[in-house]
Length: 209
Image 1: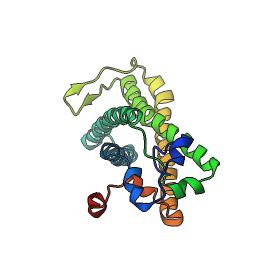
Image 2: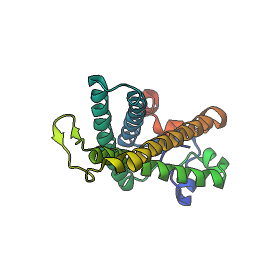
Image 3: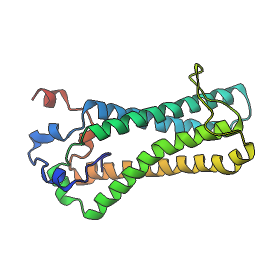
Image 4: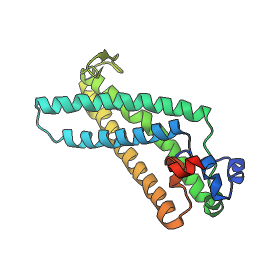
């Protein structure tokens, strides 16, 4: 299941069956770039978040916390750009073979997981920003741009509510993303229906053809 698979029946019905139509089934370069950039940043941010929480208080830990917060704000902005681009540019239709073979429950599951991922793209960094603000630690993006406090300072609320919400939403995003990757690999290696190629740049030979 590729990200942003259209749910409209007409889009599925219009999917071309011939291999030469694959170019029309690919996402545009901007959507591809945003997809892979966000994926890399989310994986990196989750990794840094897991690593830094186990470190003792030190300059290295503070530096990693700042990097983690900068990445979170960047993910938030890129998610907004991606959502706006998605709303203005209709996703390409599914390959005909994939559309015919995919049962309704899979399409419903994809739409639900896709919507949940978009929600978490915003919720995870916003909860992290709120947690930092509630602790009394301002977010200064890349050490240059001070951002406003998201919530009033309240350290007890930060530790009791915001920290678990941020952590839980981050782990939920990781789980949904892993499920998405597993589904894509299943389509690519078992079904061999060309789903993965929709979010992969076209080979030079195909682009020229």
